[in-house]
Image 1 (spheres, helix red, strand yellow):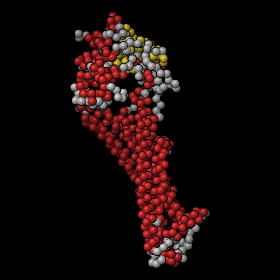
Image 2 (image 1 turned 120 degrees about the vertical axis):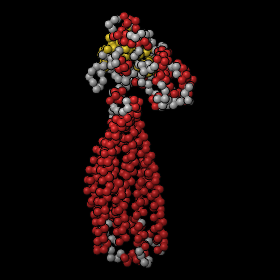
Image 3 (image 1 turned 45 degrees about the vertical axis):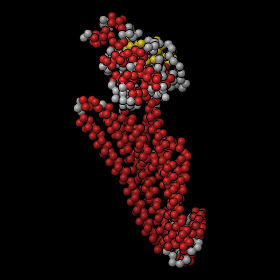
Image 4 (image 1 turned 90 degrees about the vertical axis):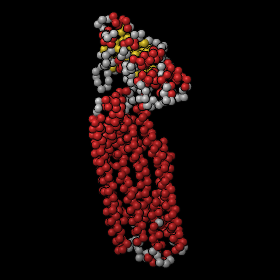
Length: 618
């Protein structure tokens, strides 16, 4: 229940609608009870042969009035007596007209307030689900890169879509049932007590047995629901991986392998679903059978009171039966509420697991704000290892990058180049040592403020399923078209963009799939140019391009580097000949530092070997 109470905390902003729903629920329950209670005077009226007052007196002369202990008896008997006096005043026709009119208004009001109640609750439910989903999505953006390295993409998508849907399916029913059904039970229980308190007590004896069974079912359901959501996350993961890697799947002809893998996961989901359905559906029938069993015993016992003891009239007993049997649907609905709470709690646990994950990279209490970059970036004895490993990826890195300098990073795969540049925008924090920007430790600078100083272009270009214009002006609202075009021209992207079907309004496709690799890269460079950051990071931005695209992209990069402090991770050494400093990394350590010509002079150096490997043919 603790988890579900956390869901209910999201209700607070919607308290007005919830209050309106509760008021409508109270009126609905009262009118629902009234519509049933009116059957007693209706039956009394229909089965009298002469004047109602005379007949009632004659019929009830030997009926003993059942006594309810305390002032409840006086209150209920007073209300019933006043009501009967008013109803049975006048001729049979007048009485019948009063009763029919009251029944009509009772059902009209009941349905009207039932509709309003459902609407207000739907507003609350949808608002809560919207806020839960938005909160989870917002929190994802606060989590560090390390979190996404350890979590499957499909699993995260499943939590924010499928798991929230499970909560959505139950929240409405739970709110509705926990408010309306208890009130309905109170109303009909009050009617039943007003007729016969002995019959009422006798009728509810079975409830403890039902509640025990309901609680057991709920615990089973929660366990199964958790496993079901985890399995759906596995299915989503397989689906995401297959769609993302569809080219590889087709190239290797592994369609049947992927089909079999997907089928295994769906079969497990199928079995878990059936098991959960069996458990969930067993609750209703058993509860209903227990209710009918009680009903049969009540009819036998009540018949004794009418025919033998004559403590209540036949019309009252029929009214009592109507009231008691009206208790069964809400009791049955309440039996499913616990099941739904358990199901939604299991799904909510997975959502709150995201919300409860504390980002290890966050702002300090009073972060500093820097307006720009003026002097240098300094690494002081920086070492780093990932959370899931104790092996150092970087070891005692010391370097200084002055404003306007181009710093190139080279080395074999796994040397630590990408990790080093990822520390600058605080995608990760150093395990030891510190990084300074203009003499300020970047841990003391507001993260959003720090990252505004930087533009990043990576080998794997990320474009969104939006227009070319929106991708270039990403995150900028109502940005002037001429500025977008200017950035596109500088990035050598304008020419191919205007040849697209809708020019700058052409949708680039998911991850830019409608464009070539070089076109995607040039749009990402245009995006960085428009941002106009003082610090640029290029992570092997040309390694996956053909020669023609590389030339165009390299020209755009050189324009972007102008008058900016730039870190370049270079796969092709020809692209960094003019770098101010070239740092050669090996096993997380800077082993060489110098200009292109200086490093080539070292016959035994790693840079010379890498250079010869790339250009030995020429």
